[in-house]
Length: 75
Image 1 (cartoon, rainbow, N blue to C red):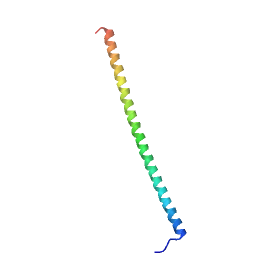
Image 2 (cartoon, one colour):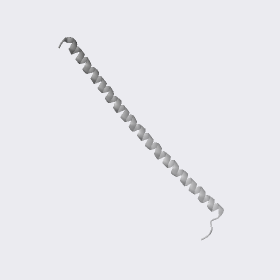
Image 3 (cartoon, rainbow, N blue to C red):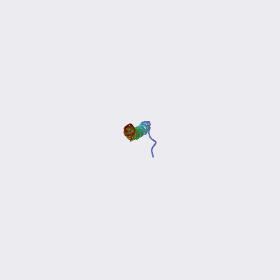
Image 4 (cartoon, rainbow, N blue to C red):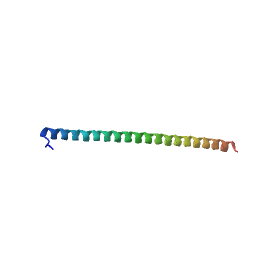
């Protein structure tokens, strides 16, 4: 087995750094994808909650309007 030359050692070091950089880039992309999906899920949940809240409010308004009209009519 021969001893690696200085140039070979440098090339190996560069290859190792390049591999590590690619790993970090891939990890960052995965993290961004997870965060994007989490934001989308929170947005859907928020909209669903707001829709339910508005529907409940309209229902309550309709109920109070019908109760008020009945009370005013003397029934």
